[in-house]
Length: 522
Image (cartoon, rainbow, N blue to C red; front, side):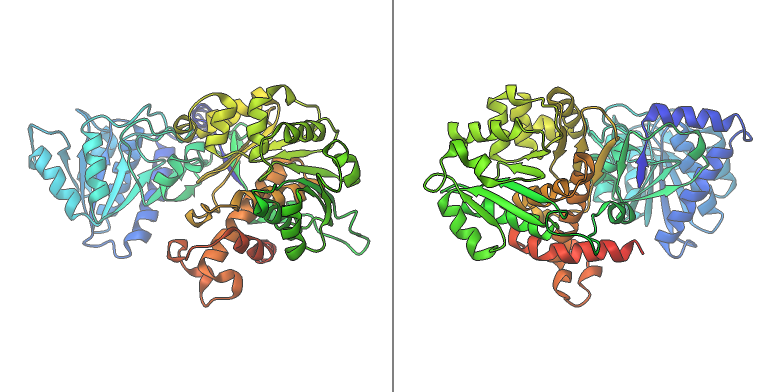
């Protein structure tokens, strides 16, 4: 588990630890870990050109001390300062190791000559750039000259390594309120920060590495967490010799219509591959015909000609959980069926058209039984009466608000999945196993069926959501790279080298994703 902590909790833990260790010990630990990571990225340190973007605070001190360590190994290190002062100890250490300083301002003179031009030339020629302009206490986007330096670094050929988190990112939320650094690698200290796990900050952080500086026993409970392979494997339901199809979990699915026949088929497929022992599908005749061709194991109740809508839920038979909404349309009869499902005492997952119905019928929530909703940003915006851009910019804030206001668990889909609960316990769960290739019609229907199957097998909504998101993202990566079908070296290729996939490919890749998780946890 990657446990992340709010800035206030990190500060409190640092204060408690600093009271027990020599002055400056934490900064030296951080700098040593940062320098080691930079050395690995450089490969050959001697002769490498390293630029340190140094702010005025402790973050700049970490970067300057790391620069001094690299300079002592033969790197050509220059620090570009972004303010009138810099961390005194770090400056002394860097100069003592043979490094030098220039100003990052747009005017003025210093030991390197014209400040602005010198900074630009140094960045352009660098092999590695260390971003130490702002730390976890930074608020808002970068101001000048930091904004210009960040833009120049983004255009340079050098690797950019962020210190603790990219400058300009909100450490607690991942928000980007203005100019910010885009890092290739982020080296963070003591604990993960929520802004490294949640977009848009997570994307700007690049690959992240945690350096242990001894905070562990001083930290409060995490405010956010990202499940890792072993965590998912531990939560995955596994059948035993005594298990039958009913003990495996019976899932009811209310999905599909005459117009959206594929949604029901994809949700059923996600549920089958997700381990449900039986699926009872309630749908329109046209959608039922499609499902019969692909999933003959599904038990079908056709709404309309065979069974009146008023009796459909009772006719379907007993289930352990419900999925409601994929491709179901938003007619008054659909709203009545959704209301009937939500009036039960069973866990219910609401997706797609079901969320649109909830936006029009807010009286249906909260309910006393476990409830999971799986909106994308636009759907959550409709529920909250805001706009999509606001949700995408502040994903954590809006997921938490919806969970609290509606009394549900929220799985907010997107480049990083955010899962928030009404009670705040467990902490916000974050998933980033996905790929841009998942942005395809029907992908969410597969996810709803998969998460519903996990609910039916007994997982609580937060755990079902987190496990489903992890497996869904992993299946997308495996399908896109060909690894799900044994393509040569598929698992080792960057997902950007993959190929387009459809939602049906996710269903086929789910068994491989589950096997990958099980193998990785051994």
